[in-house]
Image 1 (tube, each protein chain N blue to C red):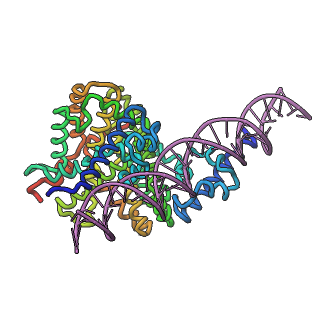
Image 2 (image 1 turned 180 degrees about the vertical axis):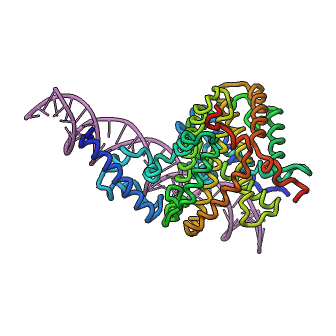
Image 3 (image 1 turned 90 degrees about the vertical axis):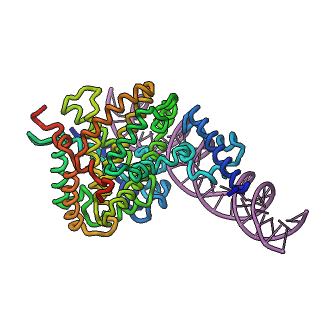
Length: 213
Length: 213
DNA sequence: TGAAATTTTGCAATGACCCCAAGTTTTCAG
DNA sequence: CTGAAAACTTGGGGTCATTGCAAAATTTCA
């Protein structure tokens, strides 16, 4: 299954551009770096940058690929007897307890957050990513529960689960931005997760239980 | 309290520019209309347009001013013995039942939706408006419940209430975009509101009950 | 009525992003 | 091994949103 030289080179170039760009962004902020500078620093033309990334924002969020279907994956992978929401809560608790970089619990994440904080267009991009997360999750729920096309529940439950996810991420982002230590934030967010679970109704917590389809 | 000529003229100019712009957007779509065209059509210079509106998107959402604190206002105006969430549900039911244009239940709203649908930057702007709605609501809840600074509940409850609001608006937008009649959509959304209420926990439904502070 | 305050405008520039045609590089059939 | 076909890169030339600046034009008010 050897891939051609061309494929390998493309992957490398793409990765290289994205790395260079992210470095510059972390150093000087999103808006202060022009696409022309990035192209220069990566030894390619501006056109090549746009060949790989549809917009400047995508250079920053390139690493976050795969984050979009995370919730859907967690739901599809839920245990027997477990509901969609409980699976997400369990996975989130796991990540937070493990102080995982995948949820932003790492040294230096504040620099990442600072870049986002200072660029409205990056925040916009984040929201549209959230929308994608929602859509992927709704699709997963619809398939897993074999809901009919007109059933509003998959949409509503997806909204509730995304809310969980978002509350956790916004909190982590805010606290890391404030300079807190990952371990500290981890403890705090575990408490938050309990608060969140307390606010969810049984209907939400018991939706899409595996085995009870 | 007579306002000066200058003030009156400014208001008029602002309104005129916004009206002209909205007309053009509805006719030809957001991206197909340039700011220069708008300025021309409104008999002002491009700089004047930017004098009144920080960005092109603000020309479209100018009318929506006041929508940002609607939830906060509803909460502050809740009845004695009524919780924040129930006040919002009651007000929403009222608007929907009355087939009110304030919630998009009007002939021609599909044209409005089509413009938004076709312009990613308008959707971005909508999300940032939602963020403002959330913040205003969280502030209101914090004040109404005299919550301490570290209390996460006002944030979480605001998230839940915004979710209600959003679910209703997204549904109305989707159905109107699909060409449904306002009266039809109204009936459908009233059912949706029951579904939504069913998914909320007692904790959410009983938060910030007036009189039980 | 004329100077001060405020608004409008023209002009120039920056930077994201798009389109196209001309190179370059990689692939692959023969 | 070789020469075209396919895919990638680049340079050049736009469009358009958005900003800064300083020169008009307008409004206010002493």
